[in-house]
Length: 255
Image 1 (cartoon, rainbow, N blue to C red):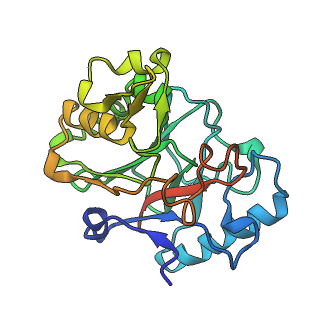
Image 2: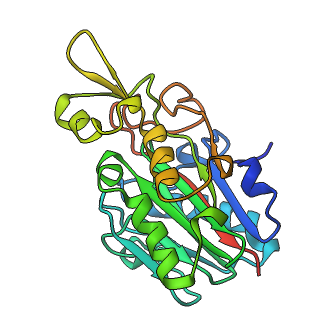
């Protein structure tokens, strides 16, 4: 069985490697990838080593993760290095988007409802992994990541390919006006409920922000998978009422 969800558009790019892990009962902790939630470190690292082995034939030697804080901070990996993979303490601090053009380096984002976005520019050969919860989306972390790619590597948004990975959908993401108010300028992302609350389409909000940043609609692929609806396959913090598991969205360049 394929251990990853994969995008068709990114899968057609021979130099770009990617994958989104899924729950797997054959592995401990349902194959959780999270070191920050209090689960036994050795067990989680063993799960990550399984992922590592799946990429080693492609000469992926380094994995970079961040200490995600729902910020709009972008970190550029400027050398072949491993951060946050075996030890939480070495993760990139206070960051929610990672960018690199180094081959053999895999970038990873951990989620259990928030929106993971994977980006690849095949012209300048640059990749990015973005964690966009409602706070990051409110701060338009997508645009800031693309701006970083433009500034550092000359990336043109119209050349970019984007994948919006499994995340909680509009069907299951109820929010109050305190959150919804940040998205009133994107009315298509909100559905008003009779109880005065709103259903928020966070994946659509990120797609719209990608397009506003210059990414072509034809280059954006949405998984269409709601983590709360498909909780047997993906961790969902909201559906599981505070789960400790996280799945990982990964992207990198083959050496």
